[in-house]
Length: 449
Image (cartoon, rainbow, N blue to C red):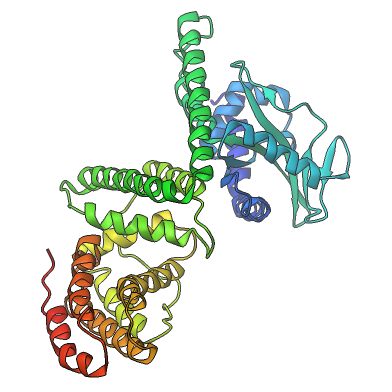
């Protein structure tokens, strides 16, 4: 015969499973609300949300003697403060207060028992009458706010946490090493001192990252170019190392894709500029944060990459490039890995990300040519003819073999060098007529190095 507490646990888990679809919908609504609220803020990094797992619920009931505290599972669920969980991630420790103050400024409509709601969504409530940040059992501070949302006439409790990058990392350490480790005793002062030392070092790292961020964003244009190249190199190496390790771990072999990770970084940093001046500090931290998530996630290297809808292309160039890449993406492992990395690190649907990269590739094929033409004294009409002819030839050469090496920095520079040699000889239409066949021949017959 089972102890009554285990009957209580089984009944609670059954109740959770019966309502899991409702919990997931409420959880998605919470995530979407807070994501829309902070997505444009420069201190914001990410939103994580979750529904409490049955394993976590079982452990919490046992750890906190909920069987003795609540007469029924229904009563327990009414009081369970972290049935749903939302974590707002920001850059630095000092940004945590900015997030909290932004919430306080928005949630100003007072409800009952210290809960407040907002004009943006009157079904989401936060308890803002408590001192923040709170102190945890381990003695460290955390921004942790109780809340609830109303969905389909029912009330669902959630816990909202605000954490900087280093505090996300610290939370993982604390939860996995201390909270989950039943052999660890709080009376072991040596371990407590060691954990305090680790926490102090993380706070130092936070301050150092903030100094780097401020320095990057305040540097002048000449220094910016040099530093952006350094940041690109760091990101490229990080991407390469993470995915090289994961491919070796999952597939048992290693693929050399160092040159193509440089292209990925160029694309992601350019994409994040949004038509304005590049914010290298923010972009760098955002990509580091995404890489940190990828390192924890499962990656299926032998799975097909899927698209939500058929990609749409703007012109003949992007149509040719896009269709060739679509034919290669699930047949050529290097292309598959290349786009898998982009899909992992960029926001949006796979279709949107694919369309965006095809546009980038068209720009990549044309950028160097157009710079050369802009520096020449040729008339504008002839410049346009040369540009279209040359880009069309480059696209044709790429589409012939769809080699991934063709798009790396070295080979693009070599092609630009070929074109530059002949453009320097052109002063008028007759010169172009004499040289254009040779330009085409050299591009079409170009072999990747």
